[in-house]
Image 1 (tube, rainbow, N blue to C red):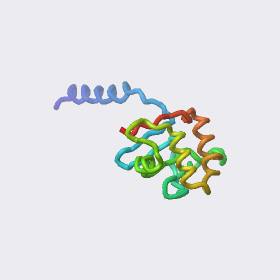
Image 2 (image 1 turned 30 degrees about the horizontal axis):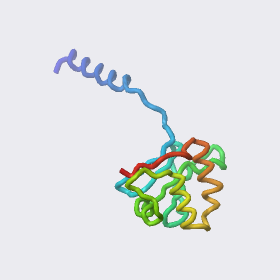
Image 3 (image 1 turned 180 degrees about the horizontal axis):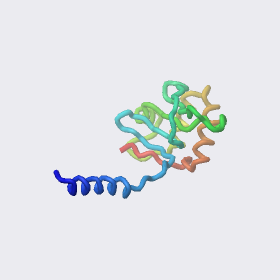
Image 4 (image 1 turned 45 degrees about the vertical axis):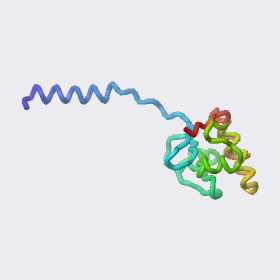
Amino acid sequence: MGDDEIQRIREEIIKFFVDKSHEPFQPFAAYCKHLDSIWVLVKDCSVTEKRVNDILTILEDNYPEIEEEKCVGFVIEYACSFCLKHGLLPQQSVQLSAVLDAVAQYSPKDTAYMDNIIRPLLKKYSLDSVTIDFN
């Protein structure tokens, strides 16, 4: 391979990486079929999982700039079976707020997490009216 060929390959590699636009992180709510979990994350950061109960896990920023903004997301595990058990039909799209209502009814002792952490977080990042598609 000659110097001209090496230079051409080098230029193509540089062009490939330079031309790629990198989208900034966007807060999201999504269903992972393989884990049967609903994931909500509002910040791209390293997190610690804090188990609230057998369904709900809070995701906390390991290095929050403001302590009050430590919660950056949550996971609802066993989402599809949980929804079926609580009268929500996962074969259709389900409002995330309806799933949260069912979680609050399932574990009333954890209502403070819902009212003081999760619902305000969703509202702040305009995820409070998100629909979860289980397909």
